[in-house]
Image (cartoon, rainbow, N blue to C red; front, side, top):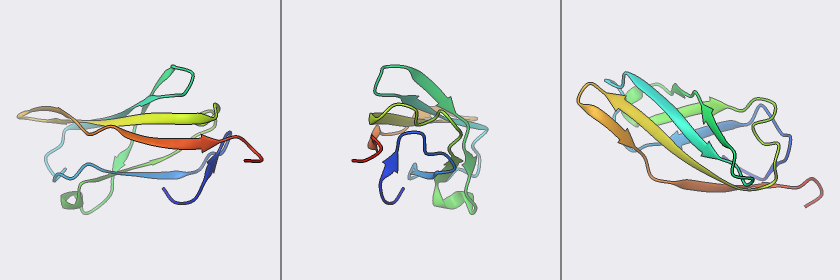
Length: 97
């Protein structure tokens, strides 16, 4: 993500670098905790080439409906096991900030 993100923005492209080859991944999602404590699940896609280890998600309306600090973790499932990525935090600003 680059630049500031404001509440109610959508169409924002979020790239999550998980740091591992995703070629054999059978499932992947992002667990998002909003500033108000509500939990959302995002369904990203793999950015090609999968060997770069990047998930990509384009936000929808209401994804950023609360200003404040968001917490995000990727969950990747492989035939050999399920892995949770490192916690990433980012801020969504109030309009006018």
